[in-house]
Length: 247
Image (cartoon, rainbow, N blue to C red):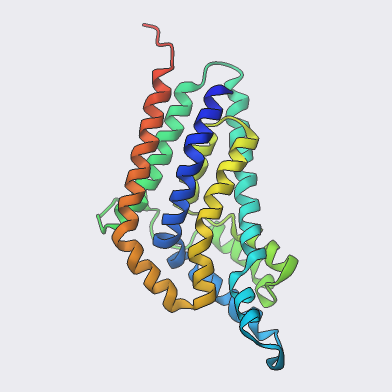
């Protein structure tokens, strides 16, 4: 538990920064259209005489949707961390924890290199085609787009939180290393909160804001992501150092 607590206190802030940077560099491009579709649909439900700046602001923030995403991410974090912790009962799993941190660093590094325009094998990027999982989730989410407010918006966030995403995979790998469900959920919640500002800005200010944010992120995002990758690798190396190697 001491190792897990130390990992959480170090990795959770890193995941928040990764989410913040990834939200700018990745989420506004991938999820920006989903956000704008919800904003447009939600504002259409408000009568013209009641439309004001407050309604536009609250409609663009999409708080229920983001809370739904955070719920899914936290649940996934709890599950993968609990599974990791359950296996750790059988034997010393510090080596596996180090490997999970290394896998997390790899996922984030791939996103950083893609942002820099570095050519990568299709096996690493996952290609550009729509997956069967994405189509299934799209069909499940479609009815909730008609009025994505309140509990419907929250449910939509829960569903779309399962969309395949390299950044989420990296965050899950890092939180799995904690081996504790509560710490795993907390780490993914920190990551989720980090992704919110960029998407909220896109929802409030429109696609133009998303374009400007992506332009800014294209310059500094990959560097910050690589710095975070380096820290995760350091944590993996530090965890390896605590393994009682026997020859």
